[in-house]
Length: 195
Length: 195
DNA sequence: ACTGCACATTGACCTAGGATAAGAACTAGC
DNA sequence: GCTAGTTCTTATCCTAGGTCAATGTGCAGT
Image (cartoon, rainbow over all chains, first blue to last red; front, side):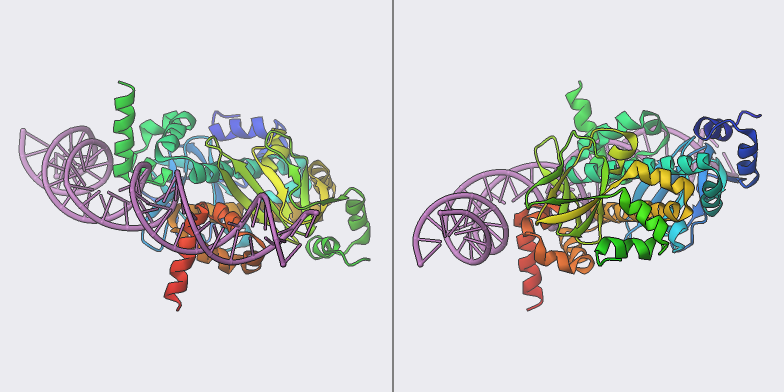
């Protein structure tokens, strides 16, 4: 067919039925974003799920005190979306921004819901995406509730070793919910321990 | 039909088609739990969604340091489940416990998935539940990341004014991610301000 | 190669909330 | 109503991590 990550991802997750796949693909558009460019801003309605074909995205909010909080990174093969905004048709509370030049596939969520009504492969796929999403969110909550900065950092390294090399520390800190200064101290302390 | 909260909830969320409803109800069982009784323990597989007909549940985890963290309360008309455990067929990381004598309806999740394949009303209902769940989780993450103890407490009061009266403070504190002592201090400070 | 800017480190200080302990106030079971 | 276990408050002290400010370092654009 072609050697896009997207199609590989879909075939291995939905199945290899060509008709189904082509139906889906025909409803997806492709879009590129330059480094720094925004895919979505707080207050806008989110209309798509973005699949990252190449590059890296971050999703973050800005709280009342003006501070950024990174919710999620999305490197290759990840989806990013604000399902709350899409589903409930509400303005999003998040920003989505490209941290590298990024190629994405835009997937219309409502289309997805429609497709799942007629084809159970989609239904199951969508269910898997939703449950995976929930799993991640729950993991983050547990972490925020119970782990120290150092533990969270170690966990991050374990979970996303590749990201560590691509994401500036300032953003890692924001993801972990600490200041860059604190992260720097944590790293120093870890280096000392492992000497 | 009857005046259970459960059926009211279902008719207003799925529809009033009697055949569909009865099909669903026929697959649900009812179960009562005494105050303090556990519905699920860490390490067990969660097999159901519990709908609270009467009473109050809490869901919590115990971290490596032995500390409890309350994830969610479920009073009347709420669902409680560990979707991760159900869906991925993994041992749960949570406990579920009755804080009052509680009557629940047990809903088999896999049945639900099956039903959504044949009836779009179920599909849409399930989708709504999932998205609502995601919304709540996201809200909690934002809160944990950006709000102070006091802000979180005020938010809790605003969101669940009724729970405040039914849940011992010690559990509210655990939900907010602070110690009971801190909560006590926060309350004192608020009382001072509003004098 | 030079400049500028974004990122990272370090240090001094501060503060929200944790730990511990002890007493006060509820509540349930007899 | 009495007793015993919870739960709640208060006080003291402590620590992780935040804030602020200064200095370093790397790298993109000209």
